[in-house]
Length: 430
Image (cartoon, rainbow, N blue to C red; front, side, top):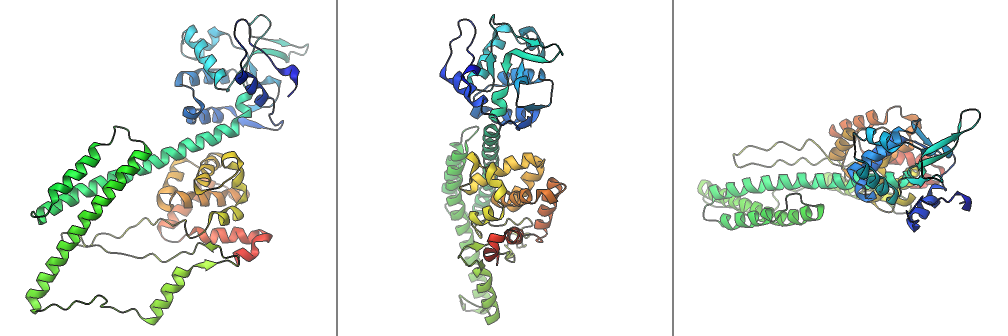
């Protein structure tokens, strides 16, 4: 950073170390860097909890961006806007002057804009003989451009946390519904059981939840309800077994119990070992093998079989994260801090890539629901790696999701194909 580019506030405003840091960051912008200002503004809105700005401050930032004449923010001296307070008040829907100044100071403290004050504190621009702006005094938007990648990562983390909380709330709702109805079934079929104690434990666990529980609180409650659900199911299964024994005894006069009535054939045993073994590379790393789905039929209490599950979710534990990163190295640049160390980092990078590839939120949520969050992130990494050959990334993701519902798609062969496309990974792919 050139020392001559450092500016200090006008009047009695004090210079702080944070202001100096923002100026240092703003001076390190890549000369070829550019970004759509409205996409960047939506990113800041997503990450406002991490950045530390309020809704009213974002309204002021929106007004400042509207005074920038171009859609793309690019490196240069033209990132300074110089509207008057009256003009800003009009574009913030009549915000009071004191409120406007307070939120401008909040944006400066958050490191999103810089003050570039003139000698007399006014905001204006000097033009050269050709009419071009030579030097301007007002608010510098360069920190937004300099922190674009950081803001995108923060927004991706917020979106990922919101998605995890939403999925946890859905699991909690399903668990509460199941427990309440299962306890009611136990009360009607076996009044002598301890159904009242089970119901009291259920109500105690549910009543302790806050109005808007956080993810940790939801997970804790899910653990308690999961234990309770297992106890209720165990009692119902014992009740069914007792009824079966009573029925067989009344019909046959005796009961012969066999723990293994149907023995598996030799070919079935071999097939099971082969399926569970999976594929392993020369280095010993495991890769995903699409296993045939096991169809289980459960019997409800009316004597009718329940429908089979229609939405399979692929497991991400069948292949390591390192295999995905070797097949799709381009996604590493979009991880937190430019690196990916865990599946959560990969899911965070996938949220950034989703926005960059213009994949809709609905398509991404549907893929996470059907494939699972980790597998959906791996699929987005593969799409990014082959983005030059894919016309519509969103349509392609939706098509893969539909094929997965029909059990016609697995992410393993896609990763293997990408591994074979890299010369150094041929032995691993084989």
